[in-house]
Length: 124
Picture: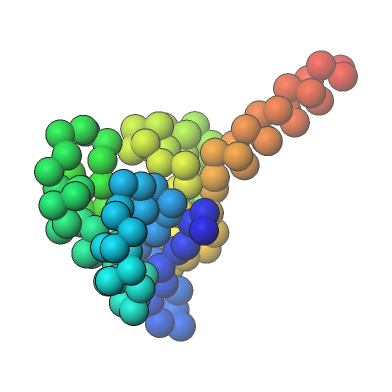
C-alpha cells in the first residue's frame, strides 16, 4: 500500500489521504483491531490515537488534522513544489474550484519533468 485517496460519492470530492506513513509505528494488535473500519475512519482513529498525538515531532501525523494539500490545474510547477516542501508531502492533489479531484502531482512526476527539461536543454 503506497497511497490511497479517499473520495466521497460519485462527484469525486477529496476527503482524505491514507499513505504508508499513517501505518508507521502502529502496533500490529492496534492495526488488527481496526481492520474492519473504513479507510476514512482509520485516518480519523490515528489522528486521535495516543500513539500519534503524544508525539513532539513537528511533522508527525498527530499534530494536525491531516490537511489535504491541493492545487489547481492552473497552478504553476513552482507553486506545487512549494506546497509539497512546505507541507512535507510527496503528493499534491489537483482539484477544481469545487474541490473535486482532477488528478495528483507526485514528487516523482516533478523530478521526471525537471529531468526531461534538463536533458532536452543539454541536447540543444
